[in-house]
Image 1 (cartoon, rainbow, N blue to C red):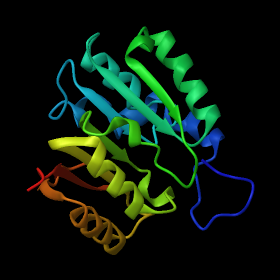
Image 2: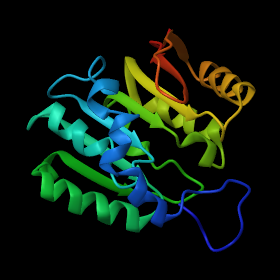
Image 3: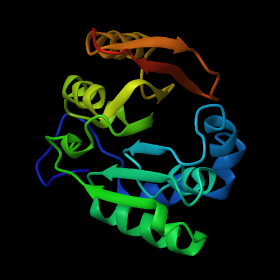
Length: 194
């Protein structure tokens, strides 16, 4: 996710990706417990900023053979490790990876195809949240949910509120405020077009 030149948005280094997929992380963020209320077998799910697939691999298992997880990241090494983890877990057929440039969300090809989106601990690394929310509004089906979470400590409550406001400007409405440990979290729903 990081280019050679300096950016005002720090991107998680690849070496930290290994700690993010640690089994110990499940004690704080259990993917199945967090995502079970929102996903059903056969869905097409977007994991934006998937890194090494902490959520992607369990999502693929939850969705079953008819489901698909579209994993998007800006770092090729993160996606390479995700592919290896998916293969080891026997879910590589359900996982589709997409390497994107730092200045584009790369979601154009998924217009109206996404049943559920996950934006977990990544928005603070994105150069233009406004462009991302606009792209997500196009990619998600009407009435599809987007689980959006940011880490307390890295992101302030005010910044999180501004992000929610930005999402609303692009057709999302607040549906719920799930509790996720050490996180600001909101479930957004893509309002149908008028």
